[in-house]
Each structure stands twice: as C-alpha cells, then as structure tokens.
Image (cartoon, rainbow, N blue to C red; front, side, top):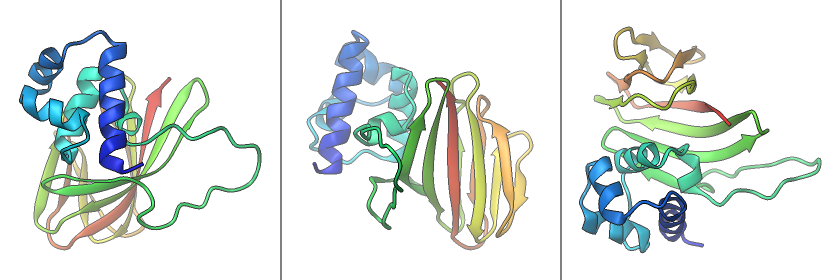
Length: 185
C-alpha cells in the first residue's frame, strides 16, 4: 500500500479508537480540520512536524502512524533495504522508519535520521518515560535536551530523556544518524 494511504488509514483508525472527532484532534494538534481530513483520506503528504503533533494528541508512538505492524517472526533475519520504509520529511529533518519491536514492556522504533545542513529542529516533549538514543554516522549534530544540547560527531552516541523539549541541529554539514525511540508499552 502507498505510504500516504497507510498513514491516512492509521490516523483515522487511531482517532476512531479514541472516540475523538476530526475537529478535536485537529484543534489539539494545531492543524486545520481540512488538512486532517485530507491526511486521513490519504490525499496529502504529512510533514514530520504534523505527524509528531498528531501522534502526541493520539497518545501514540510515531511509528504506529507510519507503518502496518509487522507480523511476528520466528527466527530469521530482517533486512531493511535503503528507502524501503516510509520516509517523512520535515523542515529540518527526514526520518525513515526501519523497524519497530514491542515486547509488551517496551516499544523500540528504529529510524534513519537525516538533518539538513544549517537547520535546527526543536521537538516538543514526548509522553512520560520516552527515551531517545542517537548514534551519529556522518556530519556534526547538536542534539539533546534544549537546555543542554551536546555536540556529536561521527561515531558519537547520546541517550536522553525525551519528555522535555529537545533539539536536532546540523550547524555545518548534513548529518546522518540512527535514532532509536524507546517508549513504555
């Protein structure tokens, strides 16, 4: 299924399960009702910022909106090909969901992250007990809590509490990293 259609179906299903109206979700997310209607119909590509706002209102991890939940696998390996997952673009960063794992206690979502040169994205606080982990592959990335961001280079790693506003900034060159979001189940 086309990613924009899948995102639309996931949005509509999550909103319906929670018994929320289109108007209420749009208002809480700070977007227009018409925009949300187009997203749910699969007629509009969402930005990363819009999807984060909607996921927050719906009380979901971002990955629950991006992809169908994979069937449980016994043994074997999962090989994710470049550009195989849904990629969502924002004003400063693009993310591509690679995998998600839920063991009933913790949900992990693994993303390929690309932050454009000279851009900064400030993420609002996530739900309680959400942890973000970043491993930088290329470029310089300023990341972490907005009150105390750290400068990371290739090979550097950071883990931080994502329940406070936090930043991703590529001050000079484009940056690539692996982002792991850890949610309580």
